[in-house]
Image 1 (cartoon, helix red, strand yellow):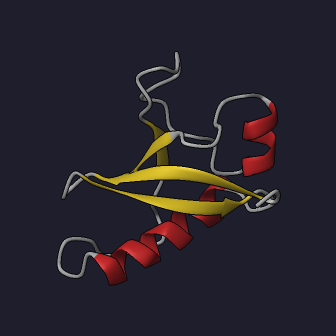
Image 2: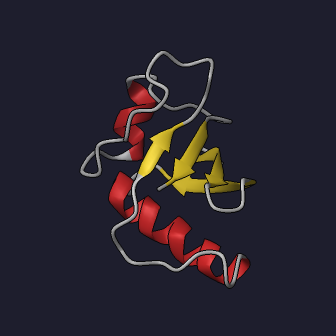
Length: 93
């Protein structure tokens, strides 16, 4: 899928990881909201979407691990700057 990026997202309360395809033209905030709403349905009782979620880099192979992604930046821009790539591990916070 050339207009999407496949990432792994860790849900911190359950320590479960799920794969998602994120549209490149969405902002980080839009993707965090989308993933959060999906987790609310998938992990009923463990996660409640508030609309205030963030995505954080969690990949031990990246130097910027532990940093929150800029909510206003597009996934495409992060990919172009090699901050995220297919298979990157993110945490929903």
